[in-house]
Length: 279
Image (tube, rainbow, N blue to C red; front, side, top):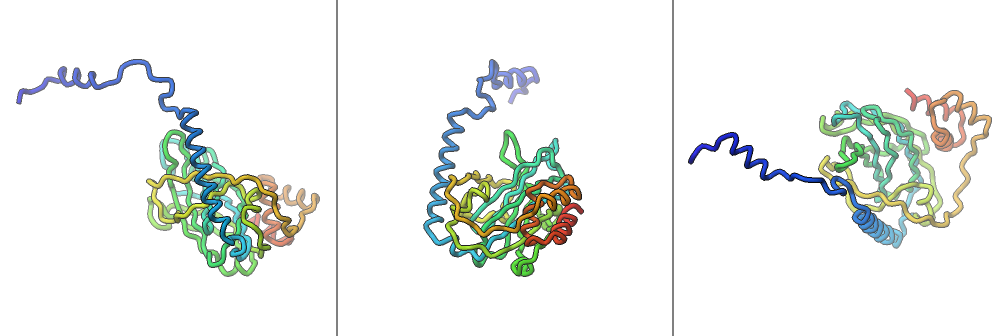
């Protein structure tokens, strides 16, 4: 076979290159395709929700679980820039997400409070941390399977750091800080709780053990429904709230109120829990 010169090789490569003005929708998601995808996701979420509402899900709940996703300490920042991490939780058949911490990198903070029904027989939480990406699929950074301790089920507020698994190995990807508390909840339809619970979608497949190649599910907020009247939580007076805010100036008001409710109105217990979160 005759040898091909470098000039001929370069000429052949140039023939394969696209030359000209790029189309206006290059690397952009068109409005039509985005609307179609959103409509399909919405219909799928509604169908799954209706299937679940058709069974006595709320009546199968043993109580209400409060999860405060405080912060994480990761061992590595994947990518060329600082990561934008967010957390996805699965409790039973329900999935919840925190907001994204822009440029959170290896030390993201969320201070997100998730209130959810705990179905009977569910004794653990499945958790994943993703890096939100603009032009590619969100990357799975870390995951954990967190058992709900008996102390929490007995009504105690439990704050701890839990190990994360990931590319570095089991329990080697860092730690995440959670505050867990549990209380008995009156039986009521699950859809009546959605407005106060934030984004949620029912998914039939488990999350734990998924790897970075997994495509994240779309999270859909259920339509508002007339909520049933829940039992009144303990109230934090304006004076007490101001005192605690002065002690924790960087802590969000809603987090303070949630920890106060989790401690059943015990001010000293609230302060101790907040101190542990800030360590």
